[in-house]
Image (cartoon, rainbow, N blue to C red):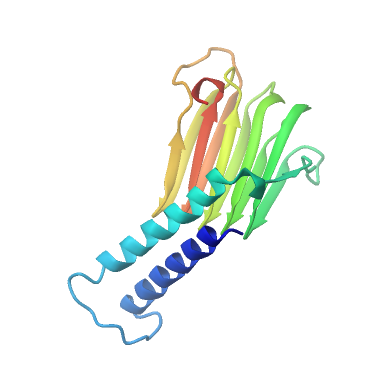
Length: 185
């Protein structure tokens, strides 16, 4: 991890501790005022920006991993904790995935994957991010359930009749998902 990533995580932890104190989950005896929410929001924003910036600008942190096989031989499951992993399909068939990012980043490149039917990708982030690269010949449908996070769908918005659809279901807590295709790189 780079120094910027560590500093970002420290900011995020400080903000979460401040919020927990304000909500009465823990007792740190920090003073309450109308500006009490400004500090945690600022710390969360700065921390998330530092972590995301360090992973996006330093590609050497992304470990190239072989595509894992699921228990059924089809659906894959990828998880990263305090790091960054990258998975890239090179002509293999894709049959869905579950992606978990906890204080780290995960990149899944499906631009060269063989996708012949509708597939589902379940994404769960906590203080982390997921980057998805999808082929331009598929439709993309995104559903998001996020708390201080979100999904950025930067794919070309068109409906291709008869094309398979990738359904992305994202659940983010202080994290985010970015979906791109060939036309948006």
